[in-house]
Length: 193
Image 1: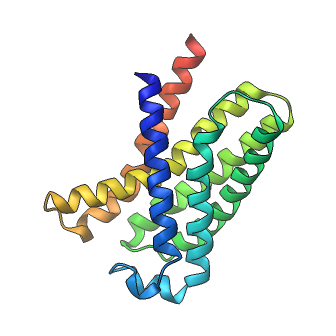
Image 2: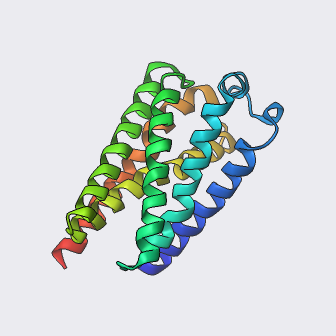
Protein backbone atom coordinates (compact mmCIF):
# COMPACT_ATOMS: atom_id res chain seq x y z
CA UNK A 1 0.00 0.00 0.00
CA UNK A 2 2.77 2.42 0.95
CA UNK A 3 4.65 1.69 -2.28
CA UNK A 4 1.46 2.12 -4.35
CA UNK A 5 0.85 5.50 -2.71
CA UNK A 6 4.40 6.62 -3.53
CA UNK A 7 3.94 5.57 -7.17
CA UNK A 8 0.67 7.54 -7.33
CA UNK A 9 2.27 10.62 -5.73
CA UNK A 10 5.26 10.42 -8.07
CA UNK A 11 3.10 10.09 -11.18
CA UNK A 12 0.81 12.91 -10.07
CA UNK A 13 3.86 15.11 -9.47
CA UNK A 14 5.30 14.37 -12.91
CA UNK A 15 2.01 14.90 -14.74
CA UNK A 16 1.48 18.21 -12.93
CA UNK A 17 5.08 19.30 -13.60
CA UNK A 18 4.87 18.56 -17.32
CA UNK A 19 1.46 20.23 -17.60
CA UNK A 20 2.76 23.27 -15.71
CA UNK A 21 5.80 23.57 -17.97
CA UNK A 22 3.68 23.41 -21.11
CA UNK A 23 1.31 26.00 -19.65
CA UNK A 24 3.84 28.48 -18.23
CA UNK A 25 6.19 28.34 -21.23
CA UNK A 26 3.32 28.53 -23.71
CA UNK A 27 1.67 31.51 -25.32
CA UNK A 28 0.59 33.99 -22.60
CA UNK A 29 -2.63 34.61 -24.53
CA UNK A 30 -3.71 31.14 -23.44
CA UNK A 31 -3.25 31.81 -19.72
CA UNK A 32 -6.50 31.23 -17.87
CA UNK A 33 -8.74 33.96 -16.55
CA UNK A 34 -8.42 35.47 -13.91
CA UNK A 35 -4.63 35.08 -14.01
CA UNK A 36 -3.90 36.16 -17.59
CA UNK A 37 -3.31 39.87 -16.98
CA UNK A 38 -1.14 39.37 -13.88
CA UNK A 39 0.86 36.54 -15.46
CA UNK A 40 1.43 38.53 -18.64
CA UNK A 41 2.55 41.62 -16.70
CA UNK A 42 5.01 39.53 -14.66
CA UNK A 43 5.84 36.94 -17.31
CA UNK A 44 9.54 36.50 -16.45
CA UNK A 45 8.77 36.05 -12.74
CA UNK A 46 5.93 33.63 -13.48
CA UNK A 47 8.13 31.59 -15.81
CA UNK A 48 11.02 31.42 -13.33
CA UNK A 49 8.61 30.27 -10.66
CA UNK A 50 6.81 27.80 -12.91
CA UNK A 51 9.97 26.17 -14.27
CA UNK A 52 11.74 25.91 -10.91
CA UNK A 53 8.67 24.59 -9.10
CA UNK A 54 8.02 22.07 -11.88
CA UNK A 55 11.64 20.93 -11.63
CA UNK A 56 11.14 20.11 -7.94
CA UNK A 57 8.09 18.01 -8.82
CA UNK A 58 10.06 16.18 -11.50
CA UNK A 59 13.19 15.57 -9.40
CA UNK A 60 11.63 14.95 -5.98
CA UNK A 61 10.38 11.42 -6.67
CA UNK A 62 13.77 10.47 -8.12
CA UNK A 63 15.34 11.21 -4.74
CA UNK A 64 13.18 8.86 -2.68
CA UNK A 65 15.57 5.95 -2.80
CA UNK A 66 18.00 6.04 0.09
CA UNK A 67 21.25 6.76 -1.68
CA UNK A 68 24.23 8.87 -0.82
CA UNK A 69 25.85 8.54 -4.24
CA UNK A 70 26.96 11.25 -6.62
CA UNK A 71 23.78 11.23 -8.71
CA UNK A 72 21.64 11.64 -5.59
CA UNK A 73 23.82 14.52 -4.41
CA UNK A 74 23.84 16.31 -7.80
CA UNK A 75 20.10 15.85 -8.30
CA UNK A 76 19.57 17.03 -4.72
CA UNK A 77 21.54 20.23 -5.34
CA UNK A 78 19.51 20.93 -8.47
CA UNK A 79 16.31 20.21 -6.56
CA UNK A 80 17.26 22.54 -3.68
CA UNK A 81 18.39 25.30 -6.05
CA UNK A 82 14.98 24.99 -7.69
CA UNK A 83 13.36 25.29 -4.27
CA UNK A 84 15.29 28.51 -3.63
CA UNK A 85 14.24 30.01 -6.97
CA UNK A 86 10.69 28.70 -6.66
CA UNK A 87 10.37 29.84 -3.05
CA UNK A 88 11.75 33.34 -3.63
CA UNK A 89 9.64 33.90 -6.75
CA UNK A 90 6.72 32.35 -4.88
CA UNK A 91 7.11 34.96 -2.14
CA UNK A 92 6.99 37.72 -4.71
CA UNK A 93 4.02 36.20 -6.51
CA UNK A 94 2.24 35.69 -3.17
CA UNK A 95 2.05 39.48 -2.85
CA UNK A 96 0.18 39.53 -6.17
CA UNK A 97 -1.98 36.46 -5.50
CA UNK A 98 -5.56 36.33 -6.67
CA UNK A 99 -8.09 35.95 -3.87
CA UNK A 100 -7.10 38.76 -1.54
CA UNK A 101 -5.42 38.58 1.87
CA UNK A 102 -6.42 34.96 2.54
CA UNK A 103 -4.71 33.70 -0.62
CA UNK A 104 -1.75 36.03 -0.19
CA UNK A 105 -1.10 34.91 3.37
CA UNK A 106 -1.52 31.23 2.45
CA UNK A 107 0.96 31.42 -0.41
CA UNK A 108 3.37 33.54 1.65
CA UNK A 109 3.48 31.05 4.51
CA UNK A 110 3.78 28.15 2.07
CA UNK A 111 6.76 29.80 0.32
CA UNK A 112 8.48 30.61 3.63
CA UNK A 113 8.05 27.05 4.89
CA UNK A 114 9.29 25.71 1.56
CA UNK A 115 12.46 27.80 1.83
CA UNK A 116 13.01 26.95 5.52
CA UNK A 117 12.53 23.20 5.05
CA UNK A 118 14.84 23.33 2.02
CA UNK A 119 17.51 25.09 4.06
CA UNK A 120 17.13 22.60 6.92
CA UNK A 121 17.39 19.69 4.45
CA UNK A 122 20.54 21.14 2.92
CA UNK A 123 22.12 21.94 6.28
CA UNK A 124 21.39 18.50 7.75
CA UNK A 125 22.87 16.74 4.70
CA UNK A 126 25.99 18.90 4.87
CA UNK A 127 26.28 18.08 8.58
CA UNK A 128 26.05 14.35 7.82
CA UNK A 129 22.74 13.93 9.66
CA UNK A 130 21.01 11.94 6.93
CA UNK A 131 18.02 10.97 9.04
CA UNK A 132 17.25 14.67 9.66
CA UNK A 133 17.92 15.32 5.97
CA UNK A 134 15.35 12.71 4.97
CA UNK A 135 12.81 14.16 7.42
CA UNK A 136 13.28 17.73 6.16
CA UNK A 137 13.13 16.60 2.54
CA UNK A 138 9.87 14.77 3.25
CA UNK A 139 8.43 18.01 4.58
CA UNK A 140 9.86 20.00 1.69
CA UNK A 141 8.43 17.76 -1.00
CA UNK A 142 5.08 17.71 0.79
CA UNK A 143 4.97 21.49 0.40
CA UNK A 144 5.93 21.20 -3.27
CA UNK A 145 3.18 18.62 -3.73
CA UNK A 146 0.73 21.25 -2.53
CA UNK A 147 0.82 22.56 -6.12
CA UNK A 148 -0.55 19.22 -7.33
CA UNK A 149 -3.29 19.24 -4.70
CA UNK A 150 -4.22 22.85 -5.48
CA UNK A 151 -4.82 21.99 -9.12
CA UNK A 152 -6.88 18.95 -8.09
CA UNK A 153 -9.04 21.01 -5.70
CA UNK A 154 -9.68 23.71 -8.28
CA UNK A 155 -10.54 21.26 -11.05
CA UNK A 156 -12.70 19.04 -8.85
CA UNK A 157 -14.37 22.01 -7.17
CA UNK A 158 -15.39 23.58 -10.45
CA UNK A 159 -16.66 20.26 -11.80
CA UNK A 160 -18.77 19.92 -8.64
CA UNK A 161 -20.24 23.37 -9.23
CA UNK A 162 -18.32 25.44 -6.67
CA UNK A 163 -17.69 29.05 -7.56
CA UNK A 164 -14.02 29.48 -8.50
CA UNK A 165 -13.73 32.88 -6.80
CA UNK A 166 -15.07 31.52 -3.51
CA UNK A 167 -13.11 28.26 -3.75
CA UNK A 168 -9.68 29.68 -4.57
CA UNK A 169 -8.69 31.30 -1.23
CA UNK A 170 -9.73 28.19 0.72
CA UNK A 171 -7.93 25.89 -1.73
CA UNK A 172 -4.70 27.87 -1.29
CA UNK A 173 -4.57 26.86 2.38
CA UNK A 174 -6.16 23.44 1.95
CA UNK A 175 -3.62 22.38 -0.67
CA UNK A 176 -0.49 22.39 1.48
CA UNK A 177 -1.63 22.01 5.10
CA UNK A 178 -2.93 18.42 4.65
CA UNK A 179 0.20 17.52 2.65
CA UNK A 180 2.42 18.78 5.44
CA UNK A 181 0.26 17.03 8.07
CA UNK A 182 0.57 13.74 6.15
CA UNK A 183 4.33 14.24 5.90
CA UNK A 184 4.49 14.73 9.68
CA UNK A 185 2.43 11.58 10.19
CA UNK A 186 4.75 9.66 7.86
CA UNK A 187 7.83 10.98 9.66
CA UNK A 188 6.41 10.07 13.09
CA UNK A 189 5.45 6.62 11.84
CA UNK A 190 8.89 5.92 10.35
CA UNK A 191 10.62 7.08 13.56
CA UNK A 192 8.48 4.76 15.67
CA UNK A 193 9.27 1.66 13.55
